[in-house]
Length: 76
Length: 255
Image (cartoon, rainbow over all chains, first blue to last red; front, side):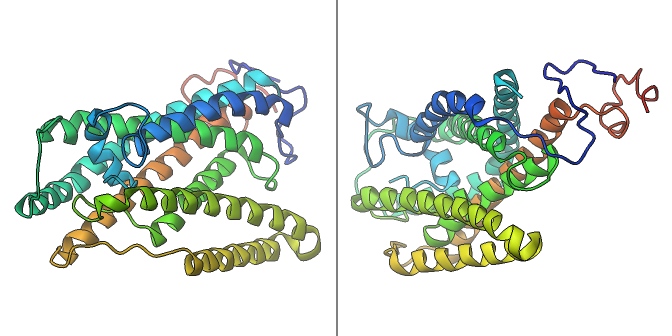
């Protein structure tokens, strides 16, 4: 087997149709950490200083105004 | 098989999301911005009060738009990468590339298309400022509902597969999803706050542009991320000559 540059190489031959499955235990920590981070990011793009506001003022809303409209979020 | 693989997939998800966001930004700038400008012109001709301009229009339509699109791309790319990690090998015997495209298509349908059909994107001056809270709640509720129903449909399809076979299990699960979404549409309150003399053509064009942006984003993400995931997970020199042709010194060696 020529196992070239990939960081993760599987012991068994992946040529067989048997699908690769990643164990849930390996995914959950990432899902919690990064999932939450990404959802916070989406909140800032989509809703901050719209319906609710963590930061006072209108700057976040105004800066993201066009993207919010065009991405389909209710803006104002 | 382990945490480094998940991490590598996540990084690729965010990178593919960034690239897809960049493409979506081009579509948004070319198709979306002219409509936003026209809608703002309408808004100002009917102006109530318009206070100080905090961010200029030229900044909003360039740097501001880019911030929104790229942040959105990275964020949904990261989440979709995580969903891909769960989906791989669990939704059927699909290759990483096919799984990526399926996850991307499912995301487009559940996160955008289904909520869009009930609560479509609105240009500036459509929508009462007083109802922003209600509209935001309904929109996010619709997204959450649609994603949950989509997940339920996948689980249902997997349960039915041994009895009905993959094809009919998928058809039944899809029909159940459509039915459930139809019920949700029927019971959730409608929102219609288009001003009386707002151009119907402009509204239609704005919404088509919004749809085109999401279509671009998810199509690009699915294809790009699929390519990267396939390369990471299935480095097979024998069949993948077309993609790993960059430097294939071992391409012909193994059999």
